[in-house]
Length: 170
Image (cartoon, rainbow, N blue to C red):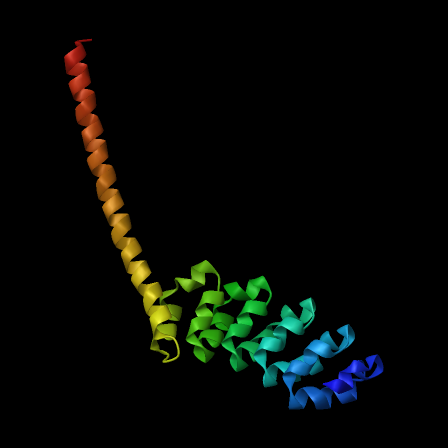
């Protein structure tokens, strides 16, 4: 990494390609031009998916680059363009690599039964997916109780109205 102290070397694609083949984290030290070079970034994310954070915004919006990153490290989804946090194919690849990557997805996909089950079946994060499922079940029970409560309140309000009408003799 000392090599990247020299600005001229940080922009030399041939040198950078050799360096990222050895260590994808080198991407954080290269020139912006090479952080926007798809070939360089693809090589870096294949080595270390989390270096997606050092790629240009353009490449964090490139499906092929994001897919390569999340296949190497599911949590790279955190650094992907927002649209990929809504992309079930990308999120599934991330979750297949690391179940807990589900928490980086949009809320809708975090509640997707297929993705939750995929995350739950992976040994790396069973409690997180299980927690999500339990919260979902508990939320459904609470919603049911709230609905029952509204029915009771409505019935009680109707009775109070009837009592007021009969008491006032209007």
